[in-house]
Image (cartoon, rainbow over all chains, first blue to last red; front, side):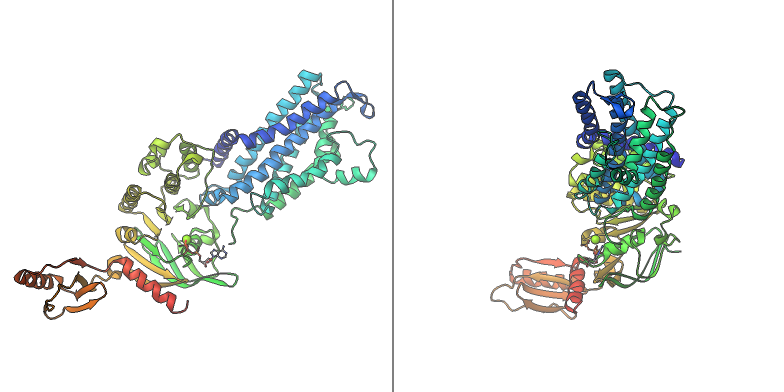
Length: 257
Length: 302
Ligand SMILES: Nc1ncnc2c1ncn2[C@@H]1O[C@H](COP(=O)(O)OP(=O)(O)OP(=O)(O)O)[C@@H](O)[C@H]1O
Ligand SMILES: [Mg+2]
């Protein structure tokens, strides 16, 4: 039995468990989709001058895609892992010979599957309901940004679960850690006219990098493969930092050793 | 080579000394019972052996490995049923077993695991709907998933109904007959007496006594014959080596040879037409010895 098979099976069962728990599934999916529908409806017909007069929805779809990725890879994974640790599931798993990477790989894989579903729903909604043009030419940049973003936010999610003292505290801590950034990262409205220091500070964090990288790929003015070097390197740096933090802080048991 | 070898094991949690110098061996193929009051240090020791906790000092060897290193090769050969653990609540029983079996190189078939733990009917039940005892059976099934050579059971039958307990005992006996080694922590003396080849009694982080349960219970100790004193008759002489006294519960005759003493007693009673009310013959149980031992430890200021 190869370790890859183990990781694959883990992913499959994580997905089963995810869809059987309505609360978790609804939260992960409902928020991004709700935002998408509400904001698109409120701003239907609006155009954004600073961005080459694109429709609001063409601007909004990649932002919500970034938010969905963060919901699935960061919020959901961090809370799920903290609950598993608090319930003693991780402790039981640690007693078996399953390799760490195969177990966590299955968890991360499950988050990636959810991200992909959100991708299909979000972009599909934009294309079908609001004539958003799918960026075929810049698709390499789009997918590379998504992939790096997924690695980055999954690693950060694992690290943050280690920092949550218990399952009750996890939702508050995890949501609080993304909430302020959500508004300064240009996800809900463009920050082209915001004070410089805000965009500078926001640009240090991976959320802005992810949103900007995806918006760049969706921008009709973008030429080439749609890869925004600054955003990709920023995400890469955060992916490395997140992995180091995950190795340092991820815990299998909640009690003292 | 013993399956488990422990020398001068110590473990402190900050200022609390939970384990204070413990030595024991568990041989291959043996069922080793671990008894002791709440907070004695049993779970601490078991989890050190399983590799979950780091010892403060001493030597520990499990199947030739140091469990503190957390090697995969060791985890493939041991099974654990922890005192308290969770399991994926939204998976079905059969799914959880399939998942965990997949972690091991030579798992036991899921059908077999369900059959030996009596969970066949619950195969398609979601874990969160199981009763407490059923979930404990699932814990046992998961401990057996990898077909381990050495199985750690930390209070495995707590919460079982009497029938389920007997069934679990059969599982342990069956594993023993297959040559597996079992480390059994329990608060049930009858369980230790029924299953263990050897037991150790621990209190306040030290081993107080160790040996086969029958020996500990004093195979050579005196048998007690008790009855209510008949009114108006002098007590009989039951021969040399029988110590007859009266305590608050009635007459008690203690002897290492109960057969002639009983013969003399009943003969005397028939002769005089005396009725021996409340006549009982008992041998001290492991429980009596356990209570005496741990009470001693408690009063000696530990
Ligand atoms: N993680 C921990 N941190 C601090 N103290 C601990 C920890 N785990 C155990 N202890 C202490 O160590 C002592 C031994 O605890 P342990 O759990 O090993 O007892 P036990 O014999 O398994 O008891 P029980 O029969 O109740 O399960 C207790 O005094 C307990 O309070
Ligand atoms: Mg215990």
